[in-house]
Length: 251
Image (spheres, helix red, strand yellow):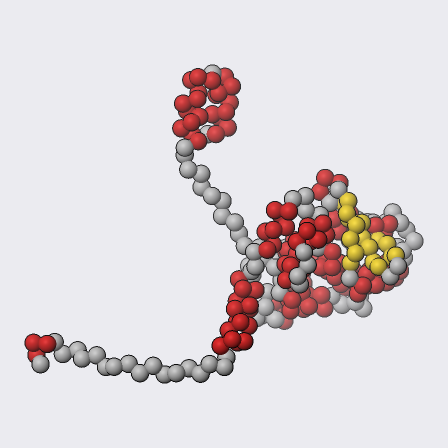
């Protein structure tokens, strides 16, 4: 209705103004914001240990999952990574990531993930091929988002089977790992502006959404607080007087 009111005002301003004002007074239903799904620290640990590095695809999957957690990169950004985007300089492992709008950012990733990626490129023979894509599928030289989605689907199923008490959310996607990286960085005390630049957000408001702690995190902090400050207090049984339920007129 609002779009039509704007169109009508351009056609006949006076006749449409009353209608447009009426439309503006109609209350707009606020969109329900769904809570962000993240992995816990234990779930990430389980997930990263699932791929079998002794097998070619298992090693690829291990490196991919590690890199997505270490970089917080979007699935498409991972697909677009080329060997030339990975640089080892002064014992620092750097990635040049091309994000939305072809904006590039250079980040430093954790040394264990960096050394793992370096070994992967050497063992696959890609280290000297600067224009080669870092990750490829069994049929294509460049991995697709759907391929990454299938990889996550596969290992989430394995994880649930082995750890039925974990991975309780209905649905996990590759973007869950990005949410997880941001949340864990916040919980580690990293400044929100540093996280913004690391993730490649164009607006700080996008990063601030991660500041809303998950219910699990809130519960953990409250539990720790309770244990610290109230564990020394003994519960004193409360003695209550028995109520005299006999009406006055029967006494």
